Image 1 (tube, rainbow over the protein chains, first blue to last red):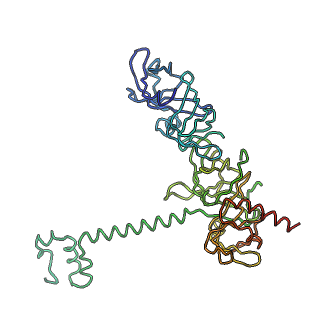
Image 2 (cartoon, rainbow over the protein chains, first blue to last red; image 1 turned 90 degrees about the vertical axis):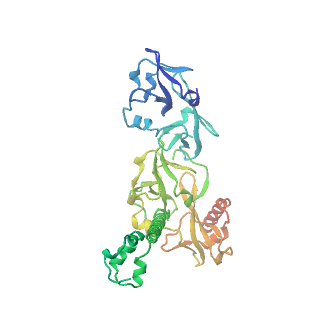
Length: 144
Length: 84
Length: 195
């Protein structure tokens, strides 16, 4: 499933059967490349992050959670940066470990079952998710 | 116009015409070359200030460019802490 | 370096300003000066500057051993721990006085070939200085044009002037593309002469 398709999906609490938020973005972490958190919008509480472990199902129409309590504020510096959009992967430049730029990320393909990132897509390249070795404020670094 | 007139003799029209000119006359009672320069209209001072700021900015950019410009440094002797 | 990069010639000025990026994707600094050893021409490392026109100067530098990969768009490092204090690479005095840009290139028989406008680097398993780009003097017949002068494997240590063997004038190139071959041919000639 592509990030571009999965964005704007509703987050539904299965206990109350109500829409509690909307998916605004994805926080990808390397080693192995995976969706670690979802960034949410239209939330009722203070928190905007949802850990992948707390997602019950990533379905074609909605993302389900067991309780609203799993939607939480950042816990550490890394999550704070994720919430501040500093680690947003879409639009970030891709550098190889030898220092060659391969364009910037236009979309990401991931497995909605596991959250594993399968493919990084730029305007000119499709890169296997396993090649991703780092993601920082400046670039996504991929192995040669 | 009287060379040593006081503030009381300035009409409201004169005062509103140019505050800086009014102040300048108080400070420089004797007319001369400095009179005309100090008595410059307010926009003259603004332009002068802008020119000074522009010159300083250009100077700062030139100095920074020079400071940041890269070089190629040739070391004549082996360095301390060189492992090779 | 993890693996040898393909043979590549590049100018030192192209390296200046390149971002230094960690493998975790964070921008550390930008390259300021290229520092090389005059004997052998090997690159010892780089001095650094902060990005942004009005940024403060930096007290650290990047030794060549800390470089993970150097490419067209960035210089990659494992992380910030590879940086060393700036004066361990080159002292302030050296950074100020030992810059070869604008230095005169003289042949060992005393001909002035022109002023250095750039330095040509060869990127392989290591990064080495292999030639000077000079604004040619009358001595070269292409006065005023920029030409490339090859250097021997061991660059003569010198003060104000850079000395090259007179034979270097026979291997001058006008473009960087053909310069790699010229450096090879020139060095082969020097080795023949020595044996």
